[in-house]
Structure formats: C-alpha cells, structure tokens
Length: 393
Image 1 (tube, rainbow, N blue to C red):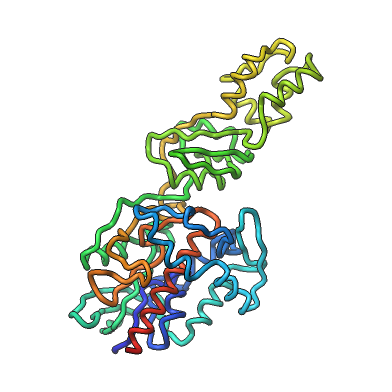
Image 2 (cartoon, helix red, strand yellow; image 1 turned 90 degrees about the horizontal axis):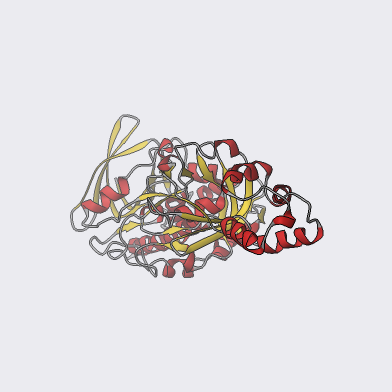
C-alpha cells in the first residue's frame, strides 16, 4: 500500500498533524485508544492551551527554534477550533484554558478533524527504511504484517514520560537512524522526592509560595506529599533543577514577614510568636519549622534583629531534593531530538526529505499550564500542512 503520509503516534501532535496532512494519511499507534494523554490531562478536563503562550515559556538548547511554529499557529487559533466544535471552555488562573466538560471532547474534535485519514490502533512499527524517494515501513497489526510505502513520515511518538501509558524512546531511535542526535533527557514538570521522609507529617498541606532555582522562579501553590514536594510551583521549577541544586522556597511571596510580625508586636506584645505564625501559615507547617526557628516567647521580647532573622528564613527556605518521581509521574520529558537539524518552519529533517519530528520528542519543553499542548498543536500543524503540499506536487 502506498500513501502520502504516515503519522507515528495518535497523541496530541500526531492527531493535529493528521488533521492537516490530507486524506491520503495513515495514523498508527500501539495503544488501544487515541489521545490517552489528552484524556487524562487537566484532571480529565484538558488544559488545552494557554493565552499567555509566549516564547519565554519554553526550554531547549535553541531558545528561538519554537518561535516560528508558535507564532503561525497560536493559542487563539486552537481556541477557534474548539469553538467551531462547540466545546464549552473556561479560563482558570494564569491564562490556562480548560474544557467545561470532558477532555474526551478534545480527542473527539481531533478525530473529527482528521476523519479523512485512516487510524490503526494496536499497531507496531517493525521496520523502517528510506530509499531516497519514499519510506518503506513494515507494520504489525493483529498478528498480520503490512508493507507500507509513504512519501512523508511524521514522528509524533512523544517522549519517555508516563511509561505505564506506553511511552517509549522510539522517536529518539528513529532520529538516530536518520543521522540526528538527541540531547540528554530527563523527567520534567515532576514532583521532588526526599527519601528521608522529612515531609511525611505534612502530607496534604498546601500553600502559595515562590519557588526559585537556576535564575527561574514561579509563584504558585506547593503541596507536601508523603514522598516530598509537589504542586504547580514545584512542577514548574523542576524543569530548571539539576541534581544537587538547592531550591529556595519563599513561604510569603506576596507579603512581608517583618511587617506582619512587627505589626502584631505593636498591637499584641504579650502574644506568643508561635501563635502569630499559626495565623500566617498552616499549623502543621509551623510545628515542622519550630525546631529550626526562634518561635518561642512573647512578641515583646523580640528584637528587630530577631524578626529580620526569622523573616530571612521564611522568605528564603532552602531545600535540596534528593531526586524526582521520574518519568513515572512526569508531565513531560525535558530535552529530546536536537533542533539544529530540523527546519523550524516545517519541522522537516535536514537529513531526510519527508521526515518530520513534532511534539514532545523534540528538544522543546513548555511550562505547566497548557504550553506543551500548544507546542503539539503548532508543530503538528506545521508538519501536516507541508506534508499535504508535498503530496500535491
């Protein structure tokens, strides 16, 4: 069977590419259902994009590579598609857009958009080669082998995050086969772990913080867990963290500890400092911090120097994670196929005409909050449109 375009991967990027690549397209995936990571995202409501999707929200060795695709297919373009399909949505904090209903609506929308393509699920790639003009692919589906030739091959098989959902390094293997290199990959947007169990008594406690590391900082919520630290602020900063680095946590990102304590001292001098702190922080966190902070005694007995020292510790609480939860729970994979050998406008390989790499497998990683979906939509749209034009030549 000869086709114009073969898309490997029926996730966000792959389905978007197939929606653009024309009717002579085959999408394959080893999973039982398409768009599984879409389905589970955003608590089942899919944080499908972000209105503030600027270039600064993406990491990669080339800080400019992603700009072309993202500028040509924006969050508002995808939102137009969502509204075309009459999917109700709402905006949460920081420009994050979610479905009012189910994430399955986004999967259904994408399938409707690429309904001219064929979709083969539970299909395995057995062999792949290129003869200078087209790709020769051997597939296995339901125990049967199928020989396919394709003018275009779009690789959208993702990264290594959440292996229980079938994530593999297939994209990296294909890239290497065709002369590409990959950067070092690791889990990103992932909770921190502290094997000593120091935060286990605080499991379930959440509060707004500012997390800082490697000249990056995020003001969002932090959640204590049995294994360590999680929550949006921690997931965000994990993409910038390297093993052995400290992370600075400001427990009062929007107010001054000094001002709060001095005000309390002026109005209630006989009150215990620990009582005041319990009004500013969760009780269990105050109890956890007490052995390392001068919380005993009345406010009247505190000098300005004591208050300044307390303030410094609470605005600059240093922790050094022992590691992360790894790919098991990571939202995305940091790093991937290097971008220097991929055309930023078309996502086509510079080594092999008709070969495209899109989505998470590429060395482009966005912040938490819909950014990685927008990269999937934008890179998929770019590759799909070019593949379609190649078929019309």
